[in-house]
Length: 457
Image (cartoon, rainbow, N blue to C red; front, side, top):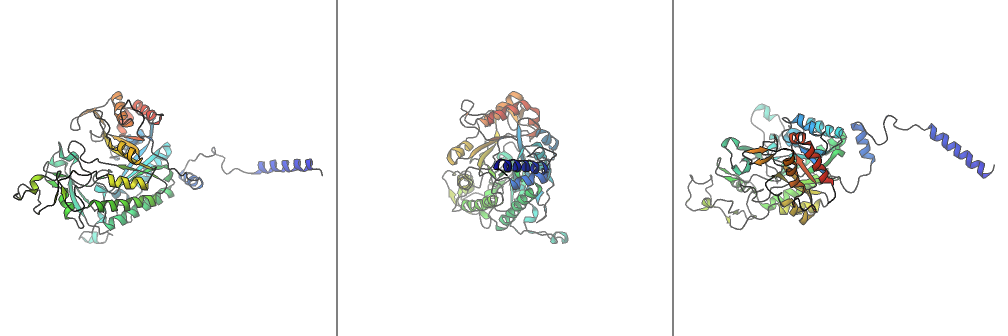
């Protein structure tokens, strides 16, 4: 038999074998998945990129999910919406120690997967710290529960440093110090269980970013109770931190931050991360992200009121503090800088710094731009929530907000999209977070903003 005949025979046999082979799927095109098992299988077989996906575009923010559930679901269908910022409290995920409720996470992760969008996940501690983290109560029922045994610290907080607020707006929260070893252990366990669950549910790949949380007050912003107020009621959070065991020190906070972010890195090694910050002495009421205490245990004055340091002050004039205090009269340093410098090195190339509260009357807060230029981070902003998360305001004040219309709402978004101003497009935000009711109402502005975020400079 000559060589040509052999080659022909081999070719015919190959064609026959190919025809007899049965493809693994015939019901849909290759690469298309339609259920959680498929998505999980794809994620296991597809090689991971060295660069994690980033949250890019317009994301709807999920504060008060129970109230805005229908709006949130509808907003995911709006053209130009790229994803969901899923904010959920620790106590909702782990209502009892080592007992997990995945109902809300699964509900919204699956909804996002079906819509073809992405998720930023923000897990809030602070006011959402579960009661079981601390020592149990005295009733027979409570004694049968498992408790963590962390040390509780009680604070009173009020929005916007009390400006325009009443005593009814005061919020009492009980948290642990971020450096409490029991808190750190339980938080690490929480993150490990979330990561494991999302992978088993097949929705892990829809998660493009996590907020670096755990150090929270009443939002998912990186902050701790720090107010010293006389109105609408007497509040002295700094006093509580000074009397804690061990007391607040910036070095302790930084070490806790290092431990917390190690936990995020360990449990989500292939994800992007974000930090929401409070700039020092920002806002009309001079907000501080952390207690104004130095590493020697001295308080900065201001914000510590001068009258509390006078030798002849009385119980009627103080804020329940009678002990002598060490005063530091230097300016309060940038309290965010050590923490952001640390994580910008730890998560180089996969970190954003964001600020909540765009206002059409003001330029975008410059700190995210500063972070981008100093540490190479990406930029994110969120619209204002002056109208109790019902909608953003485009006029008036946060006490008397005036509604937006389509043109002014687009301008509000563009304050964040172009943080250097409309004339300078050389630097723009990576993402903008919006409220669900506004996403539904201002669809043209949402789509236009999406296009501006993705357009080339």
